[in-house]
Length: 328
Length: 312
Image (cartoon, rainbow over all chains, first blue to last red; front, side, top):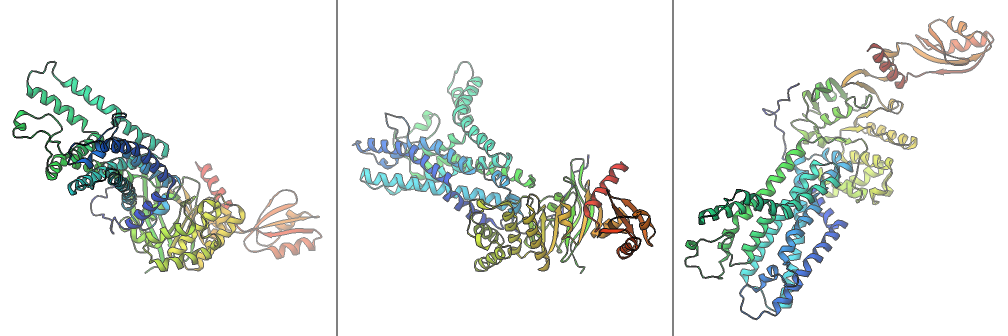
């Protein structure tokens, strides 16, 4: 076997890896915003998002009791007729949108034979991949922000009362969490678009992965937890250990991380995602909201988890793309 | 400073145990049209990608305009225009938008870019479709748009991979004219192709690739002398007398080979057309055709690979 060329030592490429990042980003962003696919995705978002929002607004208008976080309930309350809250709807709208934006990012360039021409311009592959990712993420951010503003606007009109500052702040944090969640799925679909030359295969794999985490993983996680659990739980410690295992496993799914982050942000009463020991309950006023900084502290691991996941998956796509041959 | 724009020494590319490019040496001079010829899979495209720094080398050195494509790919790609095999453009954008994107990647100032784009499109006769979507373009127009990109880039070297494949004769002719235009503008042009007669008409020098090695290199005439033997071939069509005997009697004639009914292929050490005509006419024969046979690259190519096969 011929040895692999030793090029680690001494050989360093010159010039910034971000040369040309701006133009790539601008082109991707413009392409996304003007594409027909974007129209379809927007329609999808409106259809799936409008219903929960409309019905929760309907319900909230009849609420008479004092609720200092009424505005945030628009996002989280699920109407009795159909138990789907806006946040729950987002939990599957966002992945589908992100996958729709990213599944053909690289392989379509390859299939249209534009890849080698673009890479023969003075840019590194780094800039191309990062530009595509950021272009998709910016598109996602624009859509999410628009949606967020629409929901707030509808709330203003139909509830007839302005949101308090802290509600807006919590809502903004929720928006960031939603964008980070979208980033994970965008990075995943980008990864598949680098691995597979066929756009259909790449879309199928990305959607398959999403379905796996959305439908199967909760069941698998609980099955594993049951398998590890002792046949008879004798103490609170044992119970906690089993519950902990279940939580850890389910948190491998980005959807779980997102849901927990959202619950922590939009339900200020949330103090923990697992059980609370009596010792932790000491001095707690049941149902009393946490201040924003405490809620942020609570969901910090979830947020960093989402962002780390996004970076890890993007890095994998990056490594594979660097090694890929550009020739047809 | 030598006048070479590209200098390749011992360039190597391994795919596993397979030597796709096997220690080749290559010099491209300023302002010449150089042809990389050879069958598919001989290593032409791999060589080109290594010149551009788009594929890692496994050994050897490459110098493009004083830059190393491995360490300084951006500098190389800023100065070298590349037209890939079956080039693609973004179909949903117009020709102008496609070139504008390239101009942005090249960091050309905006006002400058618009002028360069329209000039480049003018030079490839596509000015009238500047604002048409590329999805409406024919194959030939896409290739010309690719040339326009190189013109707009003001590249010092143009590398064209199979530029004429899949084009009709008229489009091929136009494209070759544009390639000559690049040369006139002082651009060194590197063409890879397996369409020999097309390439022959524009190339100053060629290199013949075979299994990752350069089998032959030089001008077409040099290659012909090397492979087909030195000599000046002509084609004679005549009747009425024993032409073969008459031809053999002419001073300088080396071989006379019948080429079908009433036609002979004559190889001499000089241009013997005048004496052939005189001899046939004066001995009462009727001369119907007398043609100078340019050594054809196709012939060189066929003969060379035939010899390789026979030797194997």
